Each structure stands twice: as C-alpha cells, then as structure tokens.
Amino acid sequence: MGMTFRNRHNEQYSCHSRLSHGPAAAADRCGSGNTYAGRTTAGNCVWCLYDGSYLRLFTWRGTQKERNLRDRPQATILVIDPQNPYRYLEIRGTVEEVTPEGAEELADQLTQRYVNQPTFFGHVEPNEKRQEMHLVACKINPTRVVTYG
Image (cartoon, rainbow, N blue to C red; front, side, top):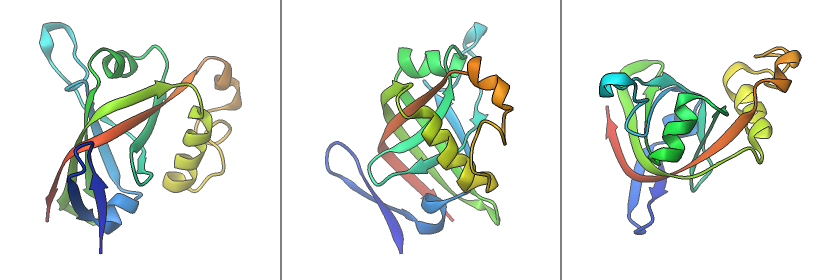
C-alpha cells in the first residue's frame, strides 16, 4: 500500500508507505542545496513528515537553510529506508511557507516520532536554548516524487 502525493497540477504520485509514514533517515537540499561561496551546495539531515498535503520540517531562524528556503523556494528531500539503503524516495517540491507559527509544536511532534521523547526543548536541546533558537516551520508542496527499490 503506497502513500499518494498530489502536486498543484493534481498529478498523483504513489510512494512507499513505510517510508512516507516514517520515521526514516531524511536529507534535504533546500534552494537547490545550501549554497555557499563558489556556488557549492550541501545537504543536511532533517526530520520531516508528510501531513497528507505537504512535507513538513523545521529549522532555526537565521540559518543558511532558512535563507535559502526563502530566497529560492525549492527543496529536495531524500528519504532513505534505514533497513535498506537502496530503497528511497526523492521528493522535490516548492516551499509554500516558512513561519514561526506552529514551529515548536512541529518540532515536538517530530521529536516524538524520531527519538520517542515528548518535547524538542528539554530532550533534544536544553530548555535554556529556547530563548536563542527561534524555530521556523517549513511547508513543502511535493511536485515530483521518484521512488527506488
């Protein structure tokens, strides 16, 4: 049974159910990768989920990733099956929103999913970091999905 993604053109993509329901290892390339001097790019590991319409992830305000998501609203998420690295989803999409609204709640939801702890602050990051780590939630509309394995 596969997860179904629909893009803005109402095209349907069927995906690997276990990977799209996670948790699985995920890496991102936002804004065609985090662009650094010399136009090099880098991917990062991220926690993400699919809510039935959008891929959801979070990052910190002021990071290169956040700037890239805002400046060039395109992203690629590679979701790798932890039991079989030759089985993966590559999901490309358009960044629809980057907002502080609901960011901590999303971080908590992903913390529960990935590390089985109730909250992000206090379990992944110390509570004291809450004042300096301003989280933003990102919504990515899938426009192309490639499955392998």
